[in-house]
Image 1 (spheres, rainbow, N blue to C red):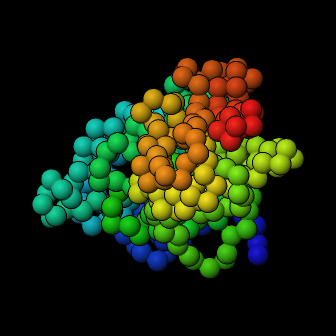
Image 2 (cartoon, rainbow, N blue to C red):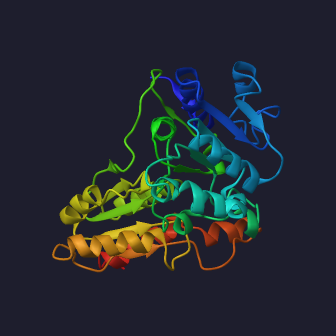
Length: 326
């Protein structure tokens, strides 16, 4: 099977859907003439023209609101935020309009729209450009949140998101865009709300989403050398959350660590832990341990940023503690 970079898998998903459905268009800052800030939309302006690949002013609230109106009238916009950090200035339209439109209109207006872009620390971007927004937005009913971790899941989940009749937030990560992996040449979709078991083990379940998944795999290799075999679950989507797949694993291993790049308080990780405690209470031999980004603004210094984020050392320490091997 051929290999594609993460950014190319995202582009292929968007391009295939734009060829399939003339209602789909891409809008955002630098997506057209500059081929995308991170080259995700490279070549799309040439193929689809300026009516369907649209450069905008630096006004996230403005082009998000415009796109929500277009979705209400039957189009299917893909909105690129150069960084999800910048989505904060568009929080009103994306949360008060996109997420609630179907409910507030009594089913008269849907909002089939995808918001996508880079989430979390991208590498020395500083405190205001390194937000992990999933915990903020997962609290709002009426939308779906996907976090692809590989080129394969990036294409399959984004394709499904574009076809979905609900607002979908696709959280990517700049540090993963050059990552390569196997991707089928044909169009395909992956279901939103279905997790995947990516590593089998009998001693502890580790649950994660997106980039931290690779820290989990690194930790699992180190722990295996100590005789601790970890089972790793790629959550893929936050809302809806596939608690059934997670619980099935925890009931086998009896221990669980959740790794989440958000800050710890009121986080996605705390919600996953609460659900595991609720569903797997009788099978757990310890409480669910959590690994998060440290509760500080993202530092600019490279070494401090790496220490602030979840990393293999923190995950190993958590697994050893939860399994009584510390």
